[in-house]
Picture 1: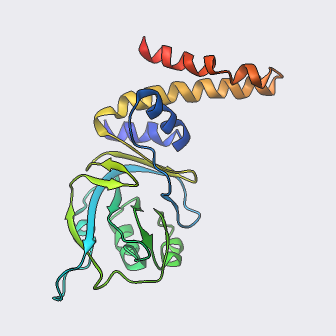
Picture 2: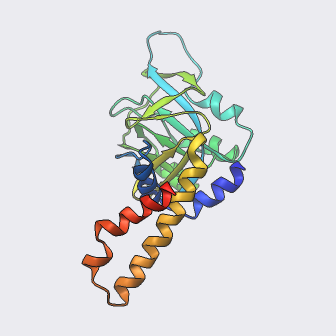
Picture 3: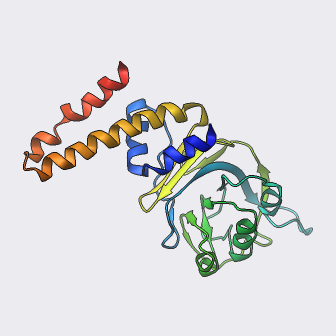
Length: 221
């Protein structure tokens, strides 16, 4: 079932999934988590990581590396929270390790460095921005596999993720089928609207609120 859900999700985009979440009154759409190079669209399931400030002087295992080592499936997207402003929480060595483990992408509520390294191996990285300042001796991994806050949205382990040039959307795993069903109907209706406009129908009529309200009526039936 997760594999089928991912295939369906891959046939959509963040705009349509965001619209479906709006109709259902669900959180998940974010602002500011954008591709940090010209990344392809990604879909996958969240492996969550929580970062925090380093408070002890003793050496520690590098952040995120234990999570990468533990991943054993090919549907994972690393979802990393707690990156402080201007400090990197991702780099090219981690990107190469993630690629070797068949991880699909990384989404950071924070910054990445060495972005050319990720781009050179076609590893997608989404986040808030770029920096050159290292995480070493500044931030550490404090937890994984637990709920995290990403750009104001709570994301749990195994939630669904879609990201493209418009940004990043998270979908609760318990609601994924409902969201996909509605999103596919929205996409079909919007395709019809485009066709109607191209055929000469008034865009004011095509984009009238009643046309969108009809989608909500369909969902309620």
